[in-house]
Structure formats: structure tokens, C-alpha cells
Amino acid sequence: MPGPPQPALTRRGSIRSALDQAHSTRRCPVGPRIRHRPDSWLQRGGNDIPGGSPSAAPIISEIIGQVIAWYGDNARDLPWRHPGTSPWAVLVSEVMLQQTPVPRVRPVYETWLHRWPGAGDLAADSPGEAVRMWGKLGYPRRALRLHEAAVVITDRYAGVLPADLPSLLSLPGVGDYTARAVASFAFGQRHAVVDTNVRRFTARAVLGQGAAAPPSVGRDLALVESMLPAEPVRAARFSVAAMELGALVCTARTPSCPACPVRSRCAWQLAGRPAYDGPVRPAQRFAGTDRQVRGLLLDVLRSSYDAVPDAALTVAGSEAGQQKRALASLLGDGLVVVLPDGRYALPGGPEG
Ligand code: SF4
Image 1 (tube, rainbow, N blue to C red):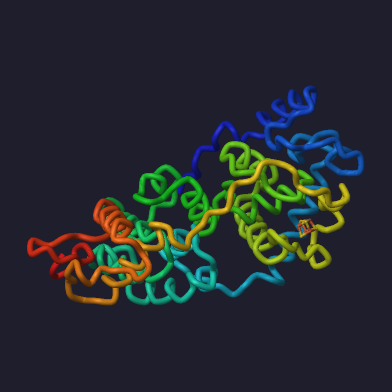
Image 2 (spheres, helix red, strand yellow):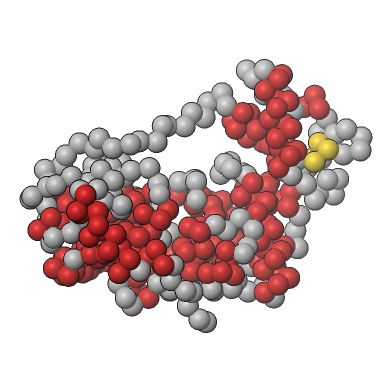
């Protein structure tokens, strides 16, 4: 199938000229807090980003080789990485992994794929069952969107997940990250795939920062795109390997640098591990929030195959006003429906 067009932002030449300009002003568009660090290979290479410097290219190539080799020896045995995993299963895994850690996703993923091995299987079931099976993965609108995507894949693509980026992006619930991840991991295409782990790894290893700045899609994609190997399958391999390294070694709080395959090339190490002093994103609270109450109300409906009365939808320790607000938002999102007799149910079931 034809490969997707490359966004202009990710072309190496564009990055280079932007960097040349940035260096004249000491501000870098791909790393707003980059400082002059004479001991960093980035500076020795003459630019702050590998793709912008021919002399840095061998170092980047070395890092890529080291990360890929490390992945070959250390990758976790995860079901969505098994040979023969279908593109649909890769999509399911990526949607589930968007905001939920691997240990919580794994059992739900396996149960989900056992029940609905293909998009057509899910499309033939009700959206309420998708919400029920989603369990406690959080952000349950993803279950509804995945069901909607299954319907579109079945109706428009005869049950076969399309491989090109624009078609993937046209599916409900599939955003830029998910489309790129599926195109790379399911179809072996060359796309920058940037999640939190990749952002942290590249911020340290390439930019010499102790932590990643808050996300900036254009800047983050440009940096990773500048590093990607030209060969699509190798690029996809590097993407998943960098993600794994960020998840297992280059972790947020205590990176295991002695075990890292790129430690001798890591810009942050070479710069003396300076403390990060750039902008940070405030931590999100969960306990006591409407989001938590929504989840608890949904638990009541998931555990019942019958519709439930208003009186059953209560959450201990939560005010009536907050419960009402949470229930209204569940209804607004289509995760819950109200029946003519006033009871509540998951959508699309025998009663909903
Ligand atoms: S050496 Fe440490 S900080 Fe650098 S990439 Fe490896 S784990 Fe991350």
C-alpha cells in the first residue's frame, strides 16, 4: 500500500534551517531551554539537533543501532508484539495504552481480543458491551470510539484496517499519535511516533535536558523525525525500541543510566546531568474528582446486566451534586442511557 505523505514540518531541511536561525539567537525551536554546553556532542557536532549536523549523523546512527540492539535483547514479551498480531489488534492495544499502563492493559486486551478477534466481531456487538469490557482502564469514551471505529472499518473497509495515515486518521477515536503508531507497528511504515517515553528519552539523550518540556506536537515530531532511519521497517523498529527504553530504563524519576545502551553518547550525561529547570506540566489529581465519581457510577452499571434505578447510582463519600454532575456527563458522552421508565443502562444493550 502507498506510504503516507511526510508532513512538511518533519523534513530534515526544514529543521536545519530553523536550527541555523535558532543558533544565531541562542534559542532552539525544538528545545526551548537548550543551553550552551561545551562538553555535549550536540555542541561538538555544531548543532543542537542531530539531523541538523552532518558530523552528528554517525553518532545518531550509533545511538539508533544501540537502541535497536538493546530492544532485541530486552523487549518485554507483550501480546501485541507477538508475530501474527493483526493490525486490528495493534489498533486495540494502542487505544488501550494511550492513557493506561501496560500491566492494567494486558489482561483487558487479551479478553477483548478473545471475544472480538476482528473489527467485524466488535461492530456486531453493542457499544454498551464495549464499555462493559473496558473495565477499569479509565477514560471509557475510548471504548465507545473503538466500537465506532470497528463499525466504520466493517462498513467502509470490509473489516480490514486501512494502512495509510489519512484513512487511519479518519477513524473515530484515532488521533495523530495512534495513527502513526499503528502505521508503524502494524504496517512497518516510517513515521515519527512520539509518546511520553520517547519524549523523555530524546530530551535527555539528544537535547541534554533532565526532563522533557511539556508536549509540543510540531517540535516533538520534528526532533524524532530528524533521527529516524530512512528504511521504513528499521524506522518502525527504532520507534518501538525508543519507547521501550524510555519505559524501562530512561524512566522519569530514576533513570537506570548504568544499564542504558546509549550512556556514552547521552547528551544529558555528557553535560553533567544538569537539573531540569524548564516548564513543567502540573500533576493531575484523581481522588475526589468528577472523573473518579464517573468511573464508580459506571462500575455499578458494568456489574449489572439489567438496567438500574436512580437509587442504585450512588457513590459513598461523594456529594449528591457531584454524583448528579457525573451522571449527566456520562449521559452526555453516550456512555449511559436513560430508559423510558427512568432506569439507567449501558448503551445498545437489550434494554439500552
Ligand atoms: S544514559 Fe540515562 S538519561 Fe541518558 S538516555 Fe540512558 S537512561 Fe536516559
